[in-house]
Length: 378
Image 1 (cartoon, helix red, strand yellow):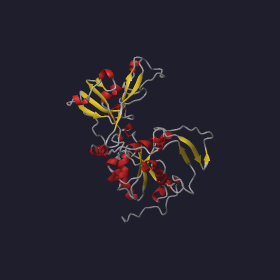
Image 2 (cartoon, rainbow, N blue to C red):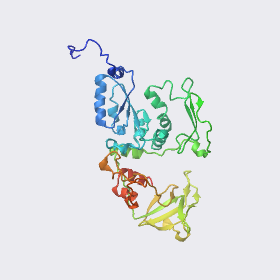
Image 3 (cartoon, rainbow, N blue to C red):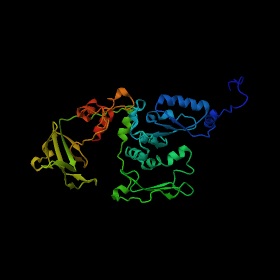
Image 4 (cartoon, helix red, strand yellow):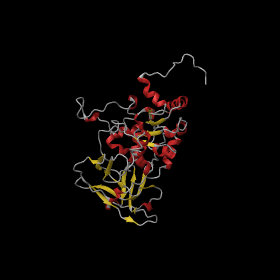
């Protein structure tokens, strides 16, 4: 159209280095892009229209839920998005990623793929990504498709992979519980119809794990993720005194030092959900009274001024101890300025004294997002 024909080669270059690019432009190759940043996607959108090629999927598109209208402008239709469930913030350019991105992108009509990025996340645990995505609002069928049907279709193998039906490759996994339930484990694997595990081990799981897991409603949290551009406020309300009610159980320390779970009594309710008579009253970090302690019995009705929290059948127990993680003291793993450097362990020659270890309480004092999310989750 511009009339700039003079000086062009008389025929298409035959150099093999251009072969893959020519096939991309001709639509014979499924193009996948690894890109985090909306500013990059803006440039990609313009390039797809200039050279008339389609992008099948964008990997690590963790901020895509903030700019879905930008991805809708790509030539040839919307690209699929390949995401982690909760691991986006390892890189500075994806710091605004959200655990609700799969839910929001699916609601926007995008095909969602859950990925491992092995060895960043061990590919053996790919299903864990789908389990988490479902927990945070991705519908059950879409979560399963995100690690089966959708990637097969997007990669161009949907004609023989990703479905259990006649004529397709007989690569099938048999699970010991619902694939999206926590702890689901392969019982048998078939490749081309041939079982791969000679002596499969069978572990009996509770019936509840054979059913699809339920996902809470995250509409409020998801809308806040968009409203605050990926950085919603995480700090909760502070209270010097609080009463926990509807507590199912509490772990009490015995004279021997061991902890024993004490159960509350279930009560009938109008909505069909179990209610419990467990009550615990805390003030200034101390337990004042508890229905689980005969020596500290109390009644919440006698304290109308105290804030109350419905624990919804939860349990109260001692703080758990873990080691080896970076939680709280590493905000952005790939950004040296956003973490406290290498953490020495007992198997390092440089390991000196226990006092050099980072503590979770230190991470909490820094108020990093990962630590606050973990704190908010209990």
